[in-house]
Length: 251
Image (cartoon, rainbow, N blue to C red; front, side, top):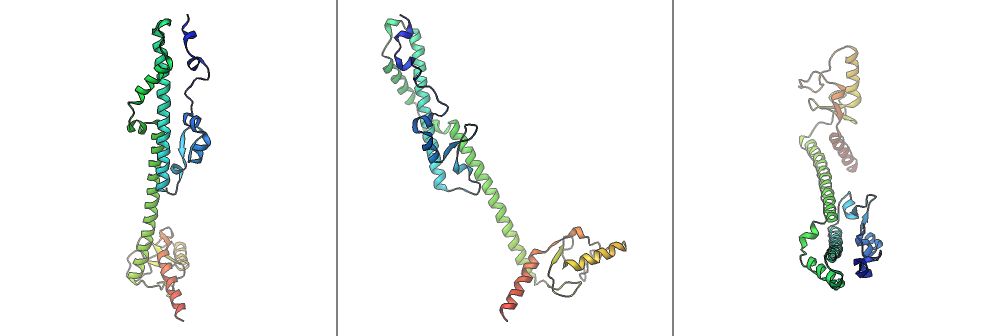
C-alpha cells in the first residue's frame, strides 16, 4: 500500500495548516489587531501606533502594545511548533512500514507537546517581529529625548539672555541716536547693541568712503564693525518692551 493512502486527510488535504504570512491575523482576525494598534506596513512589517508617535508616548499605551506583541509572538511560536510537529511526523512515517503506521493524531500531539514544554519567556523576546517593534520604540524614544533636550536648551538659553539683560541694567539708549532703541541689533564681535537703522546708515556711509566703522560705544576698541556681524538683539528688545509696558501700566 502506498504511504500516501495511509495518511489521514488532515495531513494530505490542501486545507491542512500551512504557515501563513499573517499567522496571528488568521487566528484572531486582522481587524482585531488593527483595533489594538498593531498594523502592517506596505512591506508586511508589524508596526504600532505607539511606535509611530513622533511627539512622545503614553506609557500605558506602550505597555499595552508590548503585551499585544508578546501575545503575537506566543501564537507565532505555537503555530511554528505545530508545523514542525507535523513535519517530524511525516518524516518519521517515511521510515515506517505501511503496516506499522501509528496513530498520527496522537503522534503529532506528542511531538507538539514536547516542543511546547521547552517554551520560555526569553523565546518570545527573540521573536523577529517583537524585536522589530522594540527597535522602533527605542528609536522613537531616542528621537523624542533629543527633541525634548533641544527644546529645553532653547528655553534655558532664552531665559539666560533675559536674565543677563535685566541683571546688567543695560542702557536702552542707542549710543548713536541717544534715544531709546526700537529695533536693537547686537554686534557679535564686541557684544554692543545699536539702533538698526542708525548703525546700518553709518556702515553704508563709511563704506562709500572706503573706511572702517569703529564701534560707537564709548570705550570699545573694536574698529571694524560689519553688517554681517549684526544680529537682532531679541533679549534687549523684550526687555525694552517689558519696561515700556510697565511704564504704561503705572500711568
